[in-house]
Image: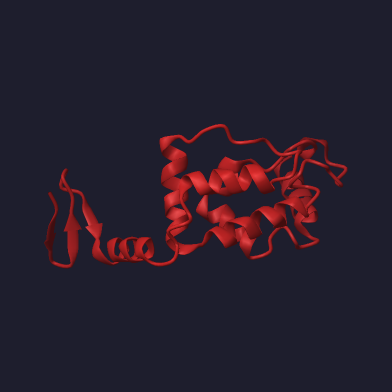
Length: 144
């Protein structure tokens, strides 16, 4: 049972949920974004990701939660576009063009992509920027 009071939504355990976030999630489910489900995201990844990237075998509660959060703001077409950007980037595929051995062999994983902050960065062109590898090398130098 939920109770709405003072512009907030209170759930079963008394958790306060901001009403505008609730409305945003509710409205997105009824728009043309219904096709972006966790199962559709896994199918899209397995069909479109480069063969160098790992395939997804199943869904966990955490994956379902993260994908549902993405579905509020993005479409399945956006998800496919992000996969295409990963496929076009050698660093994301684990084919290092850097002399830095610590990043050699690292690959984009499904779990990394479905994090909203990483997904947004990929959509904004983070992997398309030529300075991505330089930035990674610079950060590594500061750690030493």
